[in-house]
Amino acid sequence: MPQSTKRPTVIVTRKLPDVVETRMRELFDARLNVDDAPMSQAQLVEAAQAADVLVPTVTDRIDRGVLAQAGPRLKLIANFGTGVDNVDLATARNRGITVTNTPGVLTEDTADMTMALILAVPRRLAEGTALLKDPRRSWNGWSPTWMLGHRIYGKRLGIIGMGRIGLAVARRARAFGLQIHYHNRRRLSEEIEQEVEATYWDSLDQMLARMDIISVNCPHTPATYHLLSARRLKLLKPTAYIVNTARGEVIDENELARMIETNAIAGAGLDVFENEPAVNPKLLASESVVALPHMGSATLEGRIDMGEKVIINIKTFLDGHSPPDRVHPAMF
Ligand code: 8YV
Image 1 (cartoon, helix red, strand yellow):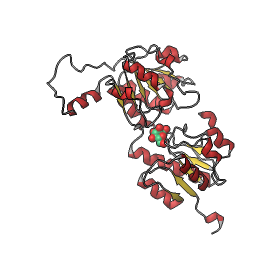
Image 2 (cartoon, helix red, strand yellow):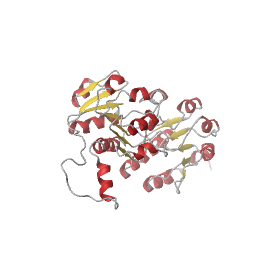
Image 3 (tube, protein in one colour):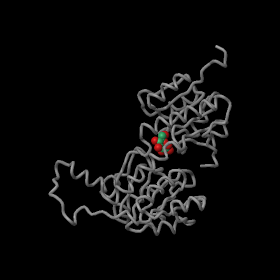
Image 4 (tube, protein in one colour):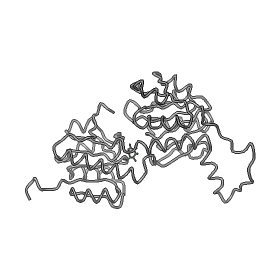
């Protein structure tokens, strides 16, 4: 078969929605993971040796070790996901491997989940439902001083990372009467600040000390690893809540768990964890923590859109153009 008609080998590390996999089979020599078992590092090396294009997800560590053993054909890593902290971007660039991601299509879903946690923790949603469903406990009826949470309306929300998702959270939170504050590498335009009536804080430390609820919406990069360090977590008011739908690594999870255990903060809504799938048991034991298994973007519509983006990135790249969602290491 002449080189030009040979279909490129695209190795997909996890099971994707049927419609995405079917289209990939039509377009490429697609090697799919129908059992959805996470790949070991050795299996990832094998995949990197055989593929023209690798499609990993957040559960795959495409580190220096994997990239160092990649075959000469591997020219594109089309990540199924927006965060690219699972890929060693510098090594990929040095080896001439392009990396793409899937921004934009999971913004609204992730912002919805963030808002759900902002509501769920102060209003004790998980506690209430767990109580009713627990056959060992019984509900003795309404009481004026029972299951009291805290009001959301009028409180100060501090958003760390005001990119697409942070802004989508701000828009929702405004509708719930929260006062929007934010810390970001770059200040937003005056127009957008006015739209969501946002107050910018150059100093993260100063913002943390004054907020009622903190929402983490920045990517995990070397610069944001443990951005909420033990020192910074201690700046929070004891009545504050933390919500994280970004990456567990942004928060010092051990310190957060210690503070939850000792009631040094009021509660946390966590969709992501530092050592997924492991979760600090102190967090799970606490009634003031609402914990979710990394579900922020988990809608069927979102996953299909992500798959479509991956396909467009691969097609554009293979056609010799710069793919629309090319990741530039300096961006992260
Ligand atoms: C995805 C995410 O589920 O896209 C991201 O960065 O965190 C998630 O919403 C996951 O990354 C898919 O690889």
